[in-house]
Length: 168
Image (cartoon, rainbow, N blue to C red; front, side, top):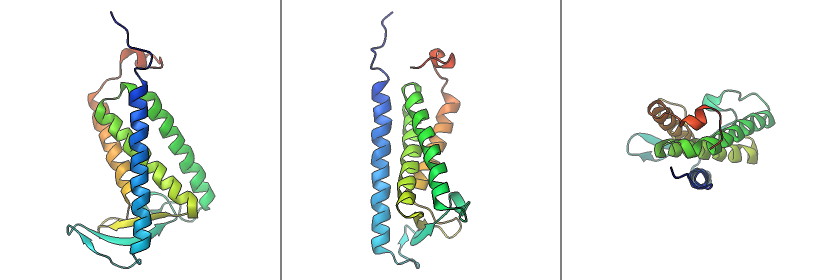
């Protein structure tokens, strides 16, 4: 039986990282554009579903932890992002393609929000629905990525080598 080349796990890993970095760059570019063009009041409508509105979130999801010092939130979210990156690196070779997209979305969104918060202690939000807290593209990447990862995990069983704790 032929064996996989030693680099078989490399391409999925680097693919997840490349997509995550592209998503990070896209979100950071949109945040810069929002800060440049939006004033903080009601803005233009997008397809009648979302309004562009500039806000700053000193906390994490739903402004949880907003009263905590910024360095604590940066440290905790930095550790979570690092753990997510390590998990993505480990699992990418065995993950189905949509699972890798989910990993990239979660990692790209987490990294974008971490970088944004690291610059000034807050995360820039600019998408407002009227019925949900204002959010940004990175938040959508995180949620969408998590949904994809859960859906693909429910349908995909890890190879036996990973189930026994072997590194791919």
